[in-house]
Image (cartoon, rainbow, N blue to C red; front, side):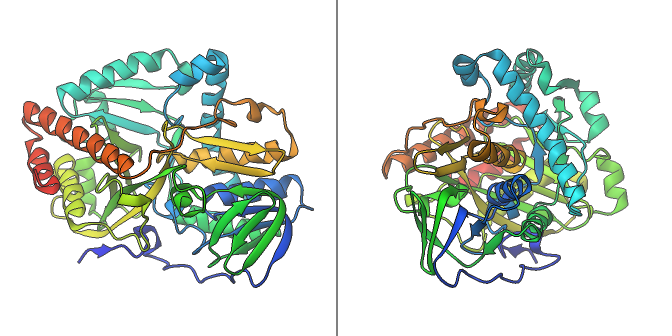
Length: 456
């Protein structure tokens, strides 16, 4: 029987962590960080590494890793959220090329720090593979490959159908684009290890402490206030819950399933020995990994957005979403058709109005922030954290000159406009994918399932 929710599959083996104490009374600190996901924990880690004497407090509404950091697909990859083109217009080719190199290096930074801190998060650096499964997708993939050829920093390689199959056998794959700067990870193991690491450094981590308002020098919660010179927001998909931030970032839902462990005979048929992370060129794309214990964990969009920027609590997803993701799993990997789906779950990610991540600090007020990763934050959170560290301790460093720093982003529209916009966008995505799959033929099973799931 499929477990639905319970935060995510990544907590199934060890269970939900025992809660740390909540904030007992108002206190003071040098730095207050709101949110104990990757962004908040990495920021606390690098601040304490640089200045051990700093008093750093992290406030978390539930437990460290409750949000996207404990629910994501486990892609530690080098993506520049929202692409490079706009940044080239504002900052020039050289700066954007360096930004890409920094994100490449961040993949290795995370692995190295985890090793130094004794964090075993099932790392396997096998690269990232994006596949095309119909002719329209192949045309987009080839066009993308031409664009990527102008960016040797990214290290991408265009693969034929045969070259793609050498890495993993995916039904109907006509070609692929592969890049080496990506590692498969176990998300919850990484965030749990980070939480323990910052506590060893002397960071005060309070769980079960919901911050309701952030203001200059102040993080306000129901348990008391934290007064600090710097207050940093690291709330990602839950940012809309903060007073005054309801329209800053849209909480977008993403859902996942995990199969039961597959037998050796099935893996022999599928291949996937390199453990690449795998995505596709569909408009409503999927993403997947081969887990360390021999499962396929696969995700995609279910119900993308809840009216009024509402967020979930325990990670439960809709039955029709589970059915759609299972259909994708079976269609791409028919050898796994007999495998049960052990777990399904969902979570929210932060989406800025321009779909580009930001990191920044107002030195006058001491208010800082990082996020809006649009689902590509596992590596970016680390670079963002080091950037926040430098904005506080070393203004003018190379990291503080990157294009995502201190960007001003237009706020989302009021309801019902943003709900209508998101629904229309994903309706168009699914319609386009359905049409392309029908023209292709072999993947028409997915088109039929999409009809059922969307109610069309």
